[in-house]
Length: 241
Figure: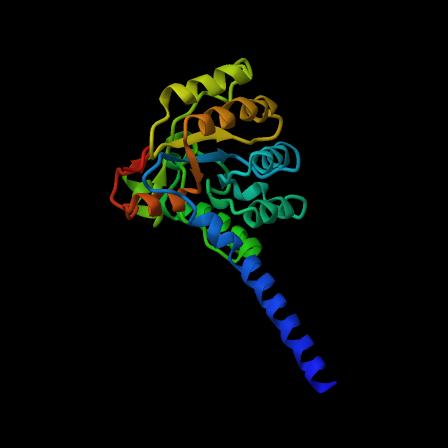
């Protein structure tokens, strides 16, 4: 009887260990499943989070099983949206910094700029337990004061004026596809009401997949390309190569 009981316990432990191992490596497998010999890009979204467009964008990412990076505005992080950030993070997406107020950083003092970035960084840390790793300046407005005040690498990207409502989903997708290249960063927006960019995902993501592109967060893109992000003044990345 003792032998039967011991055998049963051993089998349970083996089965449980296998399941834990599989679950414990799922995120790591996803992170390191990127083939460096094949083209890879980073899909990014600015101006969230919110409980409408950002949620719809996450639904699209789940639909196609891809990840993205969200450059969030600190003043948009609240009790209603913190679960949206947590969902994105749990999906394997990266949460990065787009300032607190979305003001042009070039109009602020060094101390004001630091506070803008710190506020958003602290809010993201409270939710995810991780600090923001990259900064995208609102309006891509930069000067020496902005670079000197922010201790994060700067990110730009290939855009498609998707913040203008008269640009159709097809035009948004087509413009990105015309520009994109291996190592490229795509700059789009998930601000509230930007439904045409959500619609564009059903055109853009399948087209990128068909062309052989792999999707990575911004951090993963630098990692797979073997490049350490520069903090040198004036360096802002649209392509990582």
